[in-house]
Image 1 (cartoon, rainbow, N blue to C red):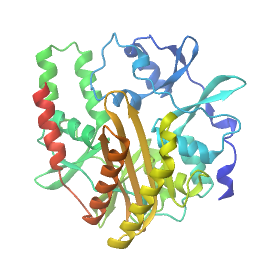
Image 2 (image 1 turned 180 degrees about the vertical axis):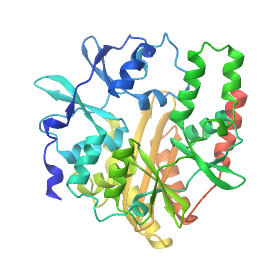
Image 3 (image 1 turned 30 degrees about the vertical axis):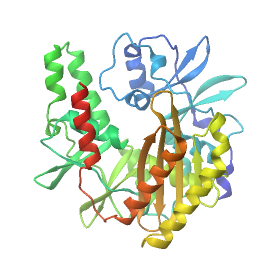
Image 4 (image 1 turned 90 degrees about the vertical axis):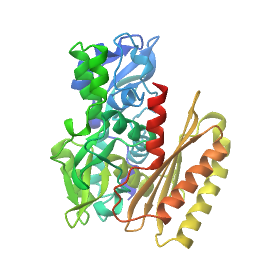
Length: 384
């Protein structure tokens, strides 16, 4: 595993483009399609990266032509000559972006794409002994094919997921992603649709854009094989099946998280705490203590044993605190929960409580719309 601490090789660096933060974001779409990620500058200084994921985090399917690119950019850590592969994997996992800037000789010279980290994980055999079923995320959130795109979008936003299983009469039909909804809405907008047509499109059914040809992998297949399939198909997730039925979802995020826990020097006894900046750093020891207590409780009172756990904290000016907690269970895959609140202490407790309750009540295959998601959708509709 020592190889995980080698530095990121320069051959991982790809060319990118640089734009001022005031540039209208719609003007940059062709560049994003070609390059995947571009660098945003403010006063000729690095301000952040822009990709489809940072845009989708806005929660709005339609992007105004007048909106500045800087509004959607996310400032993430840079990679340099001295950055270890383990540190780069950790940064990709905690930020969720598709590429990180490469800093050399006092300036950003390009980007390192997330796919390069997957190649490193594969070539260094970091997860060769793991199976897709061991790392997949559960439970699967599902939506009926006749539900509206607006409802699908709301459920994804509320649960902080990028895809839903689609069912028809209770049977598996396919997958719908947040990107599918965004692309569909953007195509309507580009055709110069009227406000009424745009509203009608938003209320269109999931069945109109569901992807039925889903990339799958058996739960006993190796993670190495999953990475190869992702690279060949150009996808970021695979539906994991057991006896031909959906059992979970294996994403690039799952793979990066597992590799980060195994190899990152910042991980202490299988615990990764990320996102703490500024004054929040002082609470790291306290957060670690709360996480350790939850892990002990899970191991003691459920039939699952925790292999590792990650806690990612985000601080917002308006929404205050967001916490994404993800735990990998021995031979049982990963479970993720999301919580938000006005206090770091109570948001953490809420996230850890949800995590424990989800594991305690866990079933092998879950097709269910959560009540909280349905309630959120109803609130969104009223606000509009």
